[in-house]
Length: 387
Image (cartoon, rainbow, N blue to C red; front, side, top):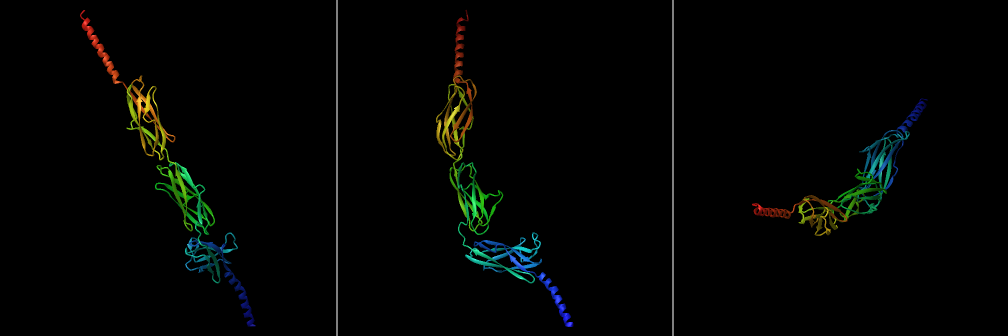
């Protein structure tokens, strides 16, 4: 009888303790949405892994299998971890979970083929494993491509040239790309993602498409011609580049001045005045068929030794002699003469203040007349003065 009571007591203890132990040491398993991926040599494959338990508890984590030379790091909360504590899922309170990320660094010399990484989770009494399948494919040159619908633009050296590029990630992994541009010395080339003017890199998913904008400012003195611009995208399986072309038609500029930089002249009636006019090409393209003209006062005459200049090269000057002849009836004073230089692409003008002075011949003639009159009066008084 005593034996029977002892047996029944043992059964009761087992029936009470066993469920509690089962509750405390519930099922343990690991899951990930994408347990099998394709990656390139040198890439890093990332897996988001969820730990499931029946009750909140600590679960230790470790990597128990991976190819030689591979490196798998478990991360959570921004740190490298070795354990996770499960808790109620805020979205599904009946679910007890913990999450972490497995980052698998694949060596660049990995050959094509199937590979496995095994993650083990261990609680107080249970163990669970998750196998991650990673298939390596050979890197295909140009897996990341960059193109432009309009790879060539033309304009003057004063313009800013803009190009829009399409970037396609044909690789098997997400890539973070940075961009750089290279042009001739003195050129300013800027390449950045189109989505944000402040961004310096673009994250492009496997098979995804992004865009970049390139702005190019040539120096103001860039000569007319064709210039290649190289733009590179860095950060993918291998660098990729595209060549853009800027066709500079040249900038046009012209200035006109006198040889001594003075904007004044002196002349007398009946005596032409010579003035050297200097036309300078201030642009980066040649000026063709430059004509000289003037707007003189009424009845004045202005002529040019070479009224038409066939060509003035960039940075060069041409001196032309102008002859100014005042009107015969011009009185002493200041007059304004406008001289213009005109080409199909540019023009400039200047105003010359011209002072008309009394002719010395007229003065001498006046003095001569006075002398003659004085002499005549002298003889008249000498002859008739005594009568």
